[in-house]
Image (cartoon, rainbow, N blue to C red):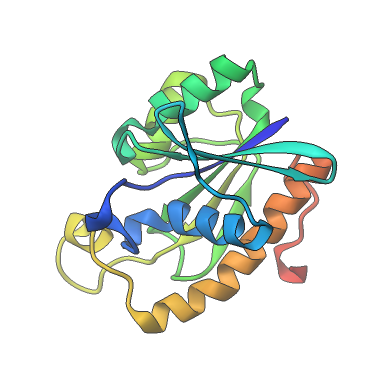
Length: 184
């Protein structure tokens, strides 16, 4: 069993906002594989799907971004999962919009959701950082809580399709190592 966690903030106010890239990416993947977030567990919304003969738990924490670790920690402890078997999808202001980067482990950087997970469970979990860029002007908080334009949503369809391939690879190989993002 593995898990994929999409970070974001719950509620209609935060739908399709810059900071909810993890939610949007996991929703895209769930739609693609026909999974529905019908359960409330681990302080979040949960869907389950079988991929490559592997049970995959999809989780959208409802603890708000800065407390994402509480949800991931509950998932890991309840299912007795190794943290290395949890793939986290998250926004990244240091990457250009629509680009993404895969890491098998690492620090949280400036991301508060990742920081809470690292604080509770350590750095040894794979993650996909989805680029949202930085605001041209204005403060960062307003930017990450702003809605993504329709034009940029079209860009994200291609990005989320590639992220879905990363999830499929992770389900079959139990690692993100060896993925060439230029070939997705």
